[in-house]
Image (cartoon, rainbow, N blue to C red):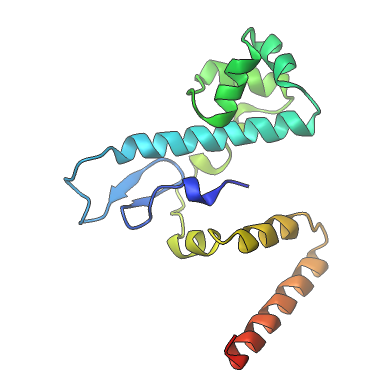
Length: 162
């Protein structure tokens, strides 16, 4: 799950997961590079997917680095998003991790806008933890029961003024 605090400010621009940026009127024409911020965000997202897949396989950074012919420090930089991953390396990493490169790209190739309200809610560590735990639930009926329970709790809390 991405750390949402690392995303660009929603008031600064409408940011699409594909990397397309539409600056808000207040920011358009101003200084700063939103394109660079979005590129860095994409680099971090891809790096997180590489790290998750590598860890799921029980592979070390050293082993992955050896498969690519780079040091484990370079793998660390890729996983943190500190260094940009060339497309050829992304394909090699995918092969070493037994998945297509497109799986490592994930949703960054879609053009859905990031929901700013949802992003603000998920900045709360309890909301993010709840979502992570919810994602671990495989059964659809259990997920629905959890959602209904949380909605009922929220309705009760708003009635009590808490």
